[in-house]
Length: 120
Image 1 (spheres, rainbow, N blue to C red):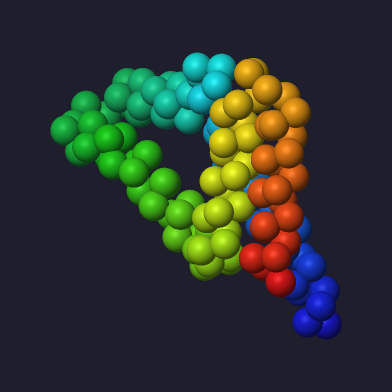
Image 2: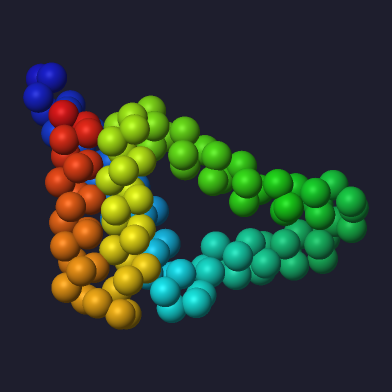
């Protein structure tokens, strides 16, 4: 039973943080697009059509910071400092995708490998 829980925990960490948070954020950085900012901009526009208050502006300034802090906390909670290393390797792998696909792939694989070790 414990092994199944650890395998699920490892799979979730690798899928959500190493690949999605790390690698894809690196790819978005390399391409020059920030989908999170675009999504929050659309959400802010929708909310501001209904509510005109200073609190809405403050909330949309603090929301990206809160999401980043929550993501970092979850990475540390699930995989500790090795988890940060795994996500960092994947992020750099995504960031160099356009300049060196081979290095990008190697960094992603290294990040996945460190992620497996971190959650074991």
